[in-house]
Image (tube, rainbow, N blue to C red; front, side):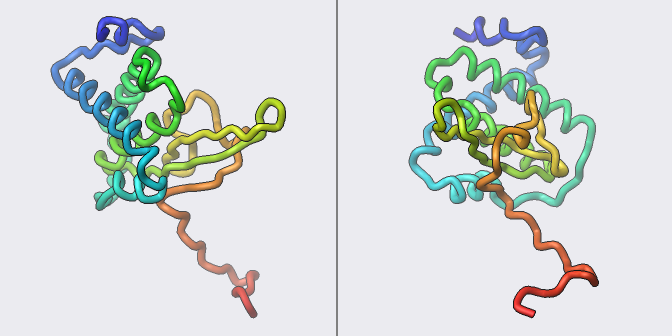
Length: 168
């Protein structure tokens, strides 16, 4: 079964070092845990639990970005080949990548959004962002989806001299 995981896409998903084998195992575990917990916990509670106590941001060490890219490649390959991960792919994928990014100290946010699909049905998507831009996504989800949830919540922006405070 694992042999098929490593044959997907042009960029090989085969681990090259013992560290990458360990990363693959951790990605597999994170995807499985996210898949099991997502239906059982509310999304805000699950994302807050995954975030834990966020370390101070130290972005962006190039090594962290390389590890995150490899984690994304492994996650996509596992989700493509493992049947139990093939339904509702974006939430477990985004939760797993959020987990690894937070542990590496990257200032990421987890987002969910909705859009009208075929026949007017709602479609959902989850993604993470780094410095306000979608991170490790193939296309910009903000072009299609309207954000309905983000963690951590956006910080309140200070008022400028031209704005009046609410209720004034």
